[in-house]
Length: 420
Length: 118
Image (tube, rainbow over all chains, first blue to last red; front, side, top):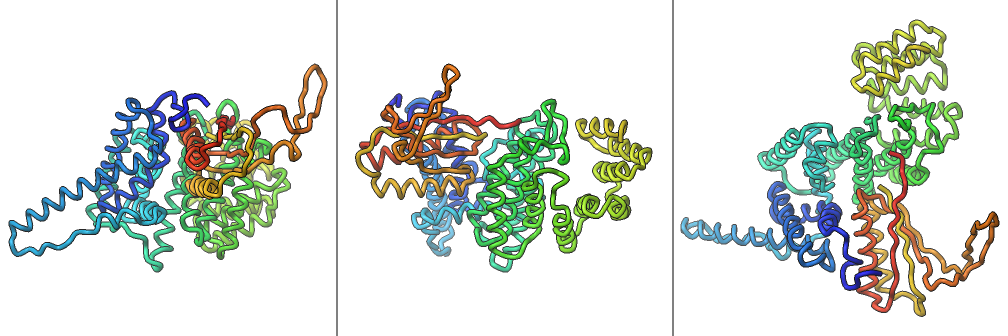
């Protein structure tokens, strides 16, 4: 070991160490501060103050022996100072009012030592509260629980920094204005609220997953952040089957990320993916999470989707995939949570288990519900090509190319239109 | 980004204190719950069945443990984190537990970046 006496050796750049500790601790620190102050915006400001203090002090005085504890304690002390000042202020106001009773405030010291896991869980529920718009929930979750900067949130959603900042500010303001309490949902409210929380993590994962170009490093890392959040949720709510289902879903899909893009960045579709490049560790973890989901209750929508992903993950090749099982799982999914996108995927599974003719019939009604979907056109094109209806397939591929906004997808469809 | 952290220890003449083992379990649970720790395991000393397979001058040789080195690999951990500094912080937390709960112990953790596709 070089440099004894410091926290495992002095990091080359103390500010990197501050940021690393900050990202590991941000969620818990902010969660604790929200419990003390009851105000997400204020809690974040106080936490940022502690971060700034660390950025100032650590490069000068060295990284403290317990950097996470230092940040948490500094943030707490600032919150307590503020609350004490406020209480003094309130007492003075009350004295002026004469007849106001000197009601005791909350016991600050007792409030300091609640179980931390609960705090974090409450923070997740507040950041994903249904009063917020979905994009606000996702931005706030990344900001509060991921410790992402506004700039990183902006890059994650491919929006301007101003727009990202506005989403976060608006979300915090909405929580304050609507007086959303910092508490765990009651048993009766849990299913609905949990659906919102899981939906946000799923949304974050999809934001990263739909990036086919792979040039911007924050997009795959968004998938990783979603996987991290899903693992966190499964740990915090182990009795809810869908937390394990979502973890399984993100890890099983995540396992295919390395094979989804060619070296030049062009997308590689499932039938053409090199399965040796799938991440075995994530598959193993995803399968284990799926087992936990199955053991803890009847399958929900994420568990069903994870079960479908598991069929792909465990199949040695595309043709050898268990298509009848996938078709049955999609039938279950579409019976309970029908959507045009599920029907589209269901049809593609049917095309493999029963034949392209049957699948084509299933797609027909979707032209009214998904008129602008490039994926619907591409799916039709694929089925028509497999039926030997080459010129119709060509037209459908051209349609798909016209509808997509993604340049990589566009060139893929154009290429397929030339030799369907 | 994924990092493999291996822990090497100097010669140990006593088993680790129970308090350290408990703290290691707690840290492992925390890292797992936070989503950073993907996999971890302890490794038996090379004397208990380790081997080195080497290729030099076109010849493959197998050497049984124990090795002549003073350090033994005692565990590995695989982390999924955002950058090297985070992996270093997890490794440092692990060593901090040893510093605080087993003052005689000396060892080192290597933080290795795992190549992943873009």
